[in-house]
Image (cartoon, rainbow, N blue to C red):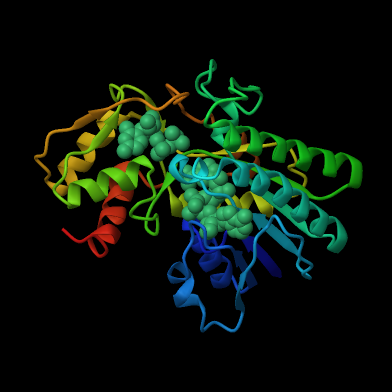
Length: 310
Ligand code: NAD
Ligand code: UDP
């Protein structure tokens, strides 16, 4: 198949491009290089089935493809809040452009949605049936509400135009090729520990997240894309839940850091707890994550060791 990956030069996108090429597909990787980098896919450039295109998804594009993975959107709060209006445009106009393309060339389209659609959840763990608790006017809203309207567009294009859609609600994912200055918690802690700096824990560190290693996530995305008839959202994440303080302690142990934790203010609207209910993914996709946090963190540490100057 010929497959388009928007945001393909980013963290998850680059791993996905790699896997799709391994499976023998042609891959068009489209990116505006806001948080992605050429370097993430430079090892793929010699492959004659791989094509890298600089393009912004807020502008229309016509390509003949069979499948579209729409990953284009900055994922770290630091980056999506840098230009919030642009984040909304990427989510809304980008989604409309990709759905228009899918409709025109009859491609199947998968949207990289997020656990952020649940906001600061009142239901725990989060099931796909939960409608969420999202602040529509806060500093996270450009991302959370952007992703929510993208889901609405996916469902409406499916119902109205019969576009073949898939919605993955991705929970916190980590691994090699996150940016050193990405700002998300796993890369921050690893980079800080490797530099001999104290880790910045926001708030008391009692808030929880559930961390999925990138290889597991990519497997889930591909299974969802290639399963027939699943148009409702599917949670993809690792249900093992940790407090942020536990994560800090695990990274300290792995790297042998002795620095004191630096407690910093908790950002506005920071969700207190988050854990995916993955019953649907297990039943429909026969998918479950296989890489425990400790093992995944080791791989991520190895990657950052090669990049971080002490
Ligand atoms: P990332 O920031 O590394 O990747 C996003 C990619 O999209 C980058 O390469 C960036 O340059 C590109 N991009 C951004 N705006 C664009 C635009 N307007 N046009 C073209 N390209 C654009 O983030 P990631 O962690 O790889 O996330 C990929 C997708 O998965 C995002 O849509 C994100 O919302 C979603 N997601 C990620 C996580 C996670 O924990 N990593 C969780 C939930 C959802
Ligand atoms: N966090 C932290 N220190 C950091 C970066 C993040 O304590 O240096 C916290 C953040 O407040 C949140 C959790 O870690 O509670 C996960 O943050 P991240 O930005 O990785 O993802 P998200 O909040 O979008 O789930």
